[in-house]
Length: 93
Image (tube, rainbow, N blue to C red; front, side):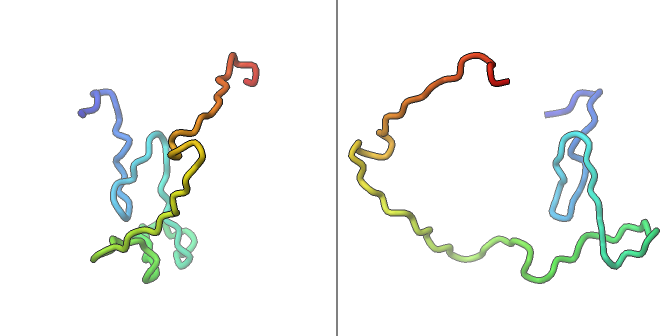
């Protein structure tokens, strides 16, 4: 959907893993231990240690272990009757 002419885009930043999608005012800081005081050059993106970045799993994935279904006296787990009290007014605000 196109933005109105008087609207500034709020998703213009590019991060290490794609667009930085934040609304409003925000800042992305790059801080490095080895960067010298007063050095305002761009240090580039952080070099992650091997094995510390999530990745897509390739191949077949094992089925998840599921909890056993227990029979409840009311029937299936979705047939449980509950009592709900809806708030009235704004007394607690």
